[in-house]
Amino acid sequence: MAEPVRLVLIDDHEMVIEGLKAMLASFGERVEVVGQAVGAERALSVVAHLDPDVVLCDVRMQGASGLDLCAELRNQDPARKVVMLSVYDDEQYLFQALRVGASGYLLKSISSDELVRQLEFVHRGETAIDPSMAARAVDTAARLQRDEFWPGARQGLTQRESEILSLVVNGLSNKGVANKLVIGDETVKTHLRSIYRKLGVSDRTGAVATALREGIYQ
Image (cartoon, rainbow, N blue to C red; front, side, top):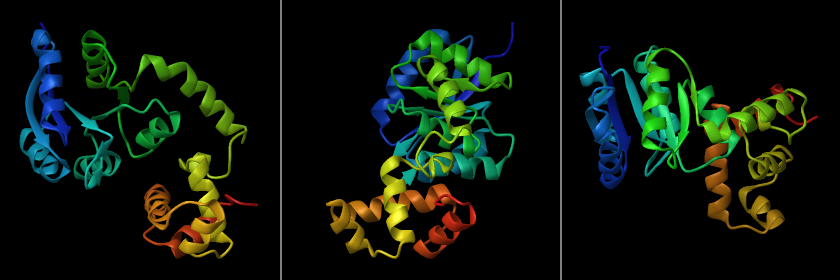
């Protein structure tokens, strides 16, 4: 009999981790939870110490993005297999996860037996995509290739983020963007942080330069 997949769970809520452990408890011969980390801060050291076959990590965590953590884990070990777990069935999140090196993207509504099956796929070197998203993801990828989405969609920007980046490229300040779109200043800052992360820059100057260099806006 093949050895079980050695799994580490990462989430910022211990209750979620315990729930996942309970889901997997009856599949011990196929998946073994060898460790866990509550929050991204401890995750790097836990994963480095345990060296699991697969890491299952929440996409959204307080204080840190699961996507950023995935990139760090992959930087720590390029062969590391990380599967993102999310409540968001938006293909843009899926594409962002694959872009940072994730080996899969699954929804929290997944059944226990399907979760085990997908983790085994990843352990064998395959990419796991939640069955409910697979067909839509293929269609979205094809439409992205045909440029049928808003500017910046290929870079993972949401439609709102694309609007905000366009205004920033045109020289509007945060307050100007907020007034134009009738949203709060803090909302603008939150969107900008997300834009910077997706474009791989640290400030608005870098975002503008990347937008112009990549031809996001014609």
